[in-house]
Image (cartoon, rainbow, N blue to C red; front, side, top):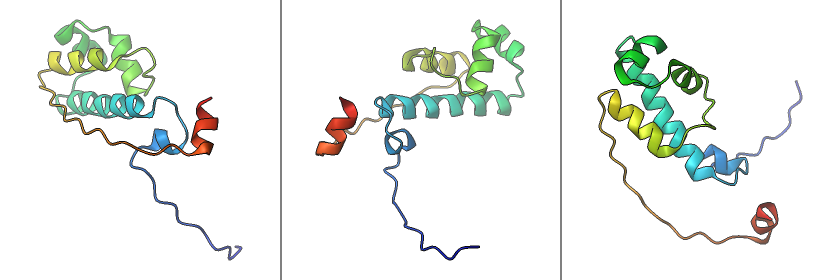
Length: 109
């Protein structure tokens, strides 16, 4: 094994931002909501078909959420699914202004 010195880089707290996704905050939020939906399904021991029966949401949609295929979902739709599963969603928003470097501007163009 090589004894290379590794550089430690502190993440931003949002993996999507760290890898350069343009819609990082939305992707992070959708991932958090998906994790809550999956936790609810697991806690209640619901199959995707049982979840469909309980909520009216297509079983295929629950499969997509379990597989982290979230492209078809909006944040409000995911909140609605959680509500139908018996959860209440509370969202706290904190907006921070960040400086955009020339490199970030080039990535967004």
